[in-house]
Length: 310
Image 1 (cartoon, one colour):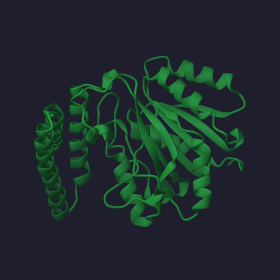
Image 2 (cartoon, rainbow, N blue to C red):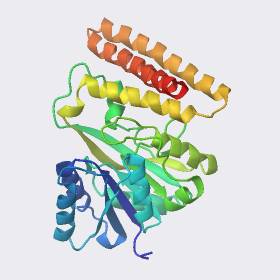
Image 3 (cartoon, one colour):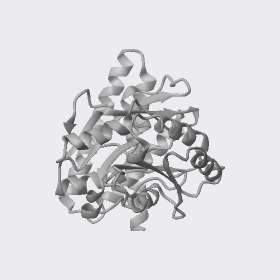
């Protein structure tokens, strides 16, 4: 292991070569010395020119520790696990391939782990950058679907069901050695919208060590283009969430399943209340989106359960 390396940055990518290059350019502008970090691009079977562009970027920036790897097993969790295998530093960071790094993002993560030696992991603030106008029917409450992750201005432990998002996620490598890696039954696979792998890993890690912190100084922007600002995309995300819930509950005690379903019923009731509130202020379309989202989650859950039982 290179003794100078403090952090390995994993960027898993799938058919987003232009956005990937923008992300890489933003990262290497960091004030942190290039000798202390490496960036590993994990290409998960892209069919565009990702490999050519990534390799060109690496050749054009020889002063940085930049690497390319191809993961042929389809799925974001497979790609992230490949990145963990490739990582040489004691701290491993995961950024999406469509982000723009905030000021000194890498340096701020290194400083955090130096200042909090008890920390096993952390999640950074994620702001949303709309490359195209946000539609009127999209409510603020659903911006987490596009990666928004903002729990204030202070460093704090995750609690109350909150957990770090994968677009700006960092763990000490020892967390994977003790709690395992990403569950490959969860997470996106190609164009299939699914998730849950970050929450699943967080729960496994915190069962052993609950020192996982929200770190607002380590912030970035997640870019959102027109192709995601559609109702079909929101529906796909919701169905994927429902499926992920079903996967995570497989084999769990009945009491845990009932508790989770009860919490989903509470969210459904809250969605009805939001529909009423939005209607009263003349923004019914936002309330309808919230309610449909919750119904789509339920459909994803029950359809997956039906498939398991058929």
